[in-house]
Length: 346
Image (cartoon, helix red, strand yellow):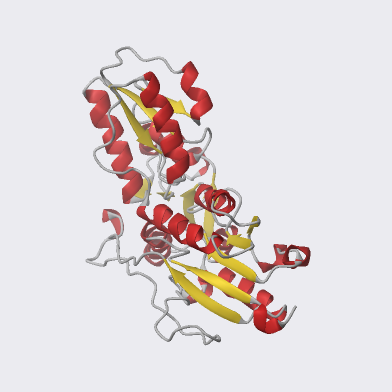
């Protein structure tokens, strides 16, 4: 195979979303204000590189608030927590900083509102995911989890005329709607949420992967295995036509055997994966002759979120600034080198 035939299609958008940027900057701001150690309940976002980088700065990740010393500060992760966690933290006299993604908070508020209106709530999501656990805790007596179409047969509600569905924000849109269609067949009066629950970043990254997969034999998704949105990108790539798709934490996990007879590789990253990991994968592919990199742009993103009120000083979280890196056939204005929040995550 001629090296000139080898190419990489790089997804845009990819990597950090506004909620992840906000969560990481929340931890950074807390370190500045309180100094280390800063405690975070669960991983701030689902990415090994981000977690290890923050640990080196003095962040201590704990499973439960009970592990935080009384009177200390604790940050709740981007995936959200149930009200019971806030209550536990108050009993320990902890200073709480809530880094829950505002789009997840929107789902929590919907759950509370529909529960107050006496609806049965059907939450489409994956059992055990932190976001799902948090959402269930906001309406524990009115909400049921529906983990895929196969669960629908077992769902019972009090009044089929008062039932609504909500969704985990990081699911595949296609996957979610398959479950919703099954629910509507059983409950024709099923009410939809007032606005789409699936995160804009999740949808945009899946749309870009669909476009990549139409041309690429192999798609490499950079992200950690406990990242739901990263896992979904692998599924979407295969469903959209790629011969193979693999999730890797970094270039070290790529198997050269995957490149056999491959001329076009698609590359993307989940919403919690920093750009330095994408850089590493592109360098690894370049060493194997894949030096021709073009960007597939599916959407433009400009959304930003303010820091939590506890840390706010009229400062708004800024999206990453493009950083140029020249590769053959890449147009000069392509957004292919999105940087991350801080230098050590780039």
